[in-house]
Image (cartoon, rainbow, N blue to C red):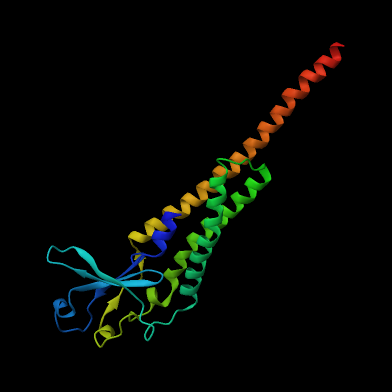
Length: 207
């Protein structure tokens, strides 16, 4: 759950770099050492390079509404991200109750199905990679006269993407574990029934 909240709300989900300065006659320093932009679902940051040749993000900020239009891919990624949290929080609460309450195998299988759904929703965040922000040229975030002269690469995975991948894998792992535990509880109940039934049958046959 923490991975989902953290990964989905960073501005370091995806990175888009400048690959060529095109016909721009000035130096890169004239553009404040910008090397690209870093995207999140709701925030973005400008990637710059310092004197030690290290890339950093100056600050995360909201997308400029006057410039950016949210296409279907961005809206879908945001919707799936929100859905993952909406479904995930109640399930986590119910799983915490399993330490002090006993649930039936059928109920656990239902929870396992919902956990699988959460894992899928979390992975659907990567629909963002098909949005205009990741494939359009010039980059639609900061349209300046310089933008038309730059060549932008498509988006690549950034630090936040690794958290989202880990989150989706953990949700899916929890679904498998819970599904297996529900089957184990069913086997356990059947074994208990057999252990009670077989001695009774033996005693009846002895009589």
